[in-house]
Every structure is written in structure tokens, then in C-alpha cells.
Length: 215
Length: 215
DNA sequence: ACAGTTATTCAACATTGTGTTGCATAATCA
DNA sequence: TGATTATGCAACACAATGTTGAATAACTGT
Image 1: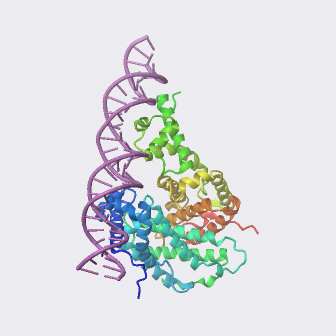
Image 2: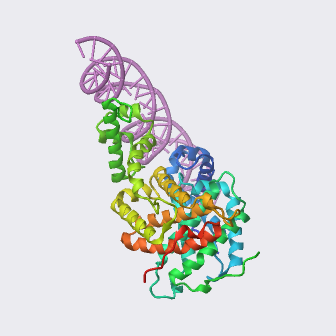
């Protein structure tokens, strides 16, 4: 019946929790770069020297502090992920819309953590998540032709970067489209590009069970 | 016969030139983030207080200092730009290959200035250059159908982000493909995606004079 | 509940970088 | 050459980092 985590001194858990909360609050308020250790300590209501008993520096706290938060957030962002790699066009649009809706609800959080100027570590983390999902969906095990004209890695990067860029632009837009509208547009674009990609990479054409478009 | 620029005191020109050089050297040596004003002053062999007579801070020097350098570099990176928006597939591949060769020659410079962790300002500058070029090539004036299924802005972002992501991955790869190889692969991918995009956006199909592929 | 352990606090300190100032010196300009 | 102006130099206030030692508080197991 032991807890999954090693029993830590409650004081330690408390302090670290306070710091995590302080970090998230401050990042949303004034961005990551401008935060000082003193800011964190003040907000967390702990002594500045206590900070150094737990973390080496800001980045150290960032990694472990956002890890948990991130792990809660990312799974909600499935990006086309469903049980099986084969996905219908309808299903893709539905999942895409739901993902965008999720991002839209946490708009401030995503805008700040992903934005160009801010936190490369988190930005990279998000991108790698995208990459992982896309690698899974366009898995090399599925490749039919022995020598694809374009290596899969290139396609993975292409797709993840494009998707990421569109999301980021959407997050920073003055008058962003609504999630359903963007989902529809992005879905159309995505589906239409698939055919070419499936040909070029030697992936099976049935990977996307394209259905008749709705008039 | 006056010079284009206002005649500046040679001492000023000298000092600023030294600082620009120092910045570029130090960025290549230890990355942008870690550079201090003292580093710059020492390397430029000027007094630290002199720095503040010319620039407000590091970023200020970065912008004006790299502007010139950047202006020399970017035009060599035409990314499909040619005289007219209509471009043949052959020509596209040739230009793409030349661009990649250019990037490859300045590999260190591009890797450092564009990399995730480094200098958001330059990264953004490069991306905006891509965006500008792509906007020019897929100009709204060319749109035929009055209501494109996918707005052009979305497509611009999609393409620029994808291209940028691939370049960046190529720059940071352990064993990067040669410029001609990547140009061929990226060109194939690009050309194959064009058809779908041209349809979806209502751009004229003749925009890319697709030629028979070479066996 | 008690004694031992340990996290936190607090004050102090050295260090580093920032940004500014006043004055002497040297380079430039007309 | 004389006036102008950029630079060098030294000093300063300030803010943030990272460390230390001793006192205090909180938690632990028995």
C-alpha cells in the first residue's frame, strides 16, 4: 500500500509545490526570462536560500516543475492520435477540432510557453511531442516500398514543423479563427497533402480512409 | 559624390565595427545568451562605458549589428525566388539546391543563429524572410476563386514553418545529407504538395509549370 | 510525548554584471 | 591651430547570484 513516490518530508513537498506554483504564476505574468530567484522565493513565501537547497537554478526548477504540469496537458493534445494508425478523415477532423479546442481553452498558457521569445525548453518539448505522435502515425514499419523517394524523417519534420507553426501563428493572432473553423481549414489542407505524401514515402494508401467530402 | 551614409566620425564607425565583429565572434564561440557587455568590450578592445554610448544593451547591438551581416546573407537564400512567380519545376530544384549549398557553406553561422536555444530575434528574422518570399510566390493577387477553401495566410505559414523546420533539422543533424540530395528530396515533397495546395487555395494551376519527372 | 533528525530561516558575505557619472585624454574636424 | 567630440578611466550605486554558519522550527520513529 506504499505510495508510489518515496515518502518525502512534507516540508520538502510543500516547498517544491510552492515553487512550482510560483513559477507557473510568474511565467504567465511576466514571462520566463524576466523571473529572478528572488521573485520565485517571494511568491512561494520561502527564503531565497531555501531555493538553492532544492534546485540548482531557474532552468532546473523549470524542467521538474513543468514536467508534471506538462504531462497533464500534453495527453489532451492528441493530434490525430487514436487507437490505431489507420484513421478516417472524419475522425481526424473531430480529433483535430477537439485538440484545438483544448489549446484554445489554455490559450494563454500555450501562447506563453510556446512563443518564440520565451522558453526554448518547453517549446522543444512540445515540438518533440508532436514529432513523436507523427512518427507513430507514419511509422517506418508501414512503409511498403523498400526505397522511399523521400525519407520518412524528412516528412515527419515537415509535418510537425508545419503544424507547430500554424498553431503558433494561431495563438499569437490578433483575431484568431475559432477552433472549429481552423480545424476545418487545417484538416482540408492536411488531408489534401496526404495523398502526395503517401505516394512519395511508400506508405500504404489506406492509411487514411479518405471519405467523400461533405458538400 | 557624397557617400550614401552620413559622414560619421571615423572613431564611431571604428568602435561600432569592432563591436559588431566582437559580437559575431563571441556568438560563434559561446552562444548569444552567455555573452556579457564586458565580454564584448574586451573583445572589441574598447572601454565598457563606451559601449553604452552606442547601444542600449546586447539586443540593441544584435539588431543593428547583425542587420548588415544578415542583409548580405539573406539574399543568397532565395528559396524558390526567381523573377516571376511562375516557376518551372526544374528551375525550382536548381534554386533550391543552390540555396542549400549556400546554407551548407555557412553551416555554423546558420546553425547557431537559427537554433532553438539561441537568438529568437534572428530566428524570427529568418522565418519572416521565408514568409515574405512565400507570400510573394503565393500572392493573393493570383487567387482565382473568390472564396478559397483554405485561407492563404494559413498556407503561407504552413509552408514557411515546414521548410524552416526541415532546414533546422538538417543543420543540427549528426550526419546531414548533402545539399543536392536534400534538394532533390525536399523538391519532390514540395512539388507533390503543390497540386493539393493549388486546388485548395484557388491559385492557378499553371503557377508551377510542372514538367515530366526525370526517370 | 520525547529525543533525534533535518528542513527552513535569517543575516552576512563575496562575486559578478548592469548602468551611470565626471573628468582627463586623445582623435577628429573645419 | 583651435574647437569639438569620442574615448578611456575610475568610481559609484544597484541588483542578482550563489554560499555559509548558526538558530529555529517542523517532522520522524519509537
